[in-house]
Length: 76
Image (cartoon, rainbow, N blue to C red; front, top):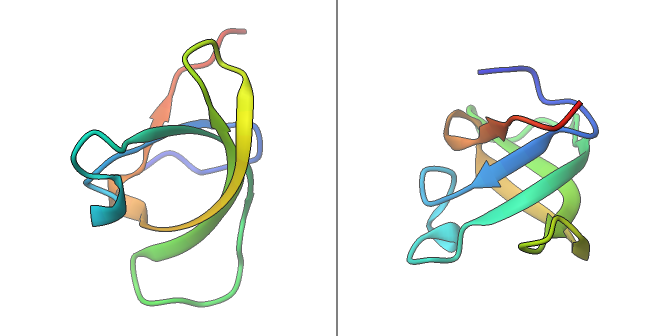
């Protein structure tokens, strides 16, 4: 797993949580990773949901399994 850092582009799908299953996956531009302890392997992420054009449409805080988070490549 690549280290998550602000500005990373993430894909959150059903591997992260059932809330993103069934076509509800989303791309999230990461703002922060909450440092508070949670259940092992889980983490709170804050970021902006991106639409098909890459524009931020909603700020979200999500609770996900870290092992399921995919870091997407970003343009330089």
